[in-house]
Length: 424
Ligand SMILES: *Cc1c(COP(=O)(O)O)cnc(C)c1O
Image 1 (cartoon, protein in one colour):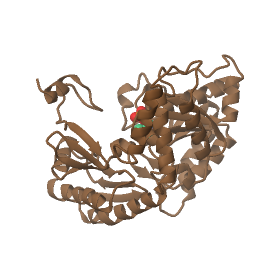
Image 2 (tube, protein in one colour):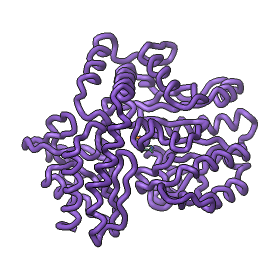
Image 3 (cartoon, protein in one colour):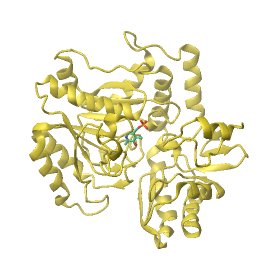
Image 4 (cartoon, helix red, strand yellow):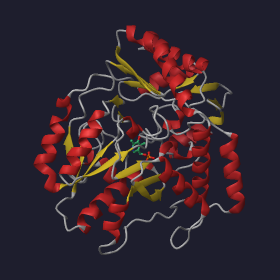
């Protein structure tokens, strides 16, 4: 059995069946913005490995940081022990996020960071004697991860919700903000949120939201003003505000964090994906003095979570190196340039009958089609054209590494145009 056959028979891939029904492409190396396949074909990578590899692959600074840490220690348990990689990273995160966020919980993945955020909000309310506040308010079109708690706040219609409806926590949903990014602000965008919080606040522990960009739930960009008023409404009704910046964090939307688009600071912030520059899995949930104190002052006088690989030193070192590289590297002008090139090169797609909308924000480019694509088929067409792009539903989208050249963005955009025009 060769590797392909073995893989197809024994190994689950994201959102896939076993035995596999679609073709996999075997990777032998990566470098910069390229993925090299076993047949030595080089693909320009439009996905940055799902938002994470913001500096491109095999960056020497990140690799050196990992080598150095491996020589010292790769992992120790975090119960009862502390270490420089964790303290140095937490210091940086506290410094670059809004001022009130200062208590850091490290975990392994974005979904767990969301679980931790939900648990913090619930434990906070229980600690204050408000155990009836045990539901989370979320948005239609939201995506917050694949574990059970995270699933319970994903879109209730299009996500895996329906399949698990008997099992998931029953949370509360409201429509996504109707006012799109770039449109004139329209106050009626808030009506639904206002009404649902007024009506249900005695039951609501927290409102969770992806600031400005709804990612895997639909690649939808909405007006940042929504966040300003949402925070006011939450504060008026004693509801915590959770921002999930797992996709948007670390420069992707043109601000270091998308929350800066509205200058709003949440009670709890989730980070992941690009945190380590795509080197290793790491996530963080950061909260305020107030939330941490309430939780810590009431029985059981502890926040009840503690992953085995909490604050893994290798991952922390990669994150420190990635953040320093980002802040020193003029990321803002790089993202601005990418935004400009995406606007320019994706514009021809607007002329295609199959295209519903083209939208660009920061280093994110989205081509929304009128109909859903057949992933297995379209994937092969992209690879034929020398690019790695992985659409979902009716959305072809790219979020390149910040080091990507103009020519590479042109190549990605041209491939999108051609695949839509010639093969769909
Ligand atoms: C990817 C993502 C998650 C889940 O992160 P994983 O690391 O895949 O568990 C949660 N929220 C948002 C907004 C994401 O984009």
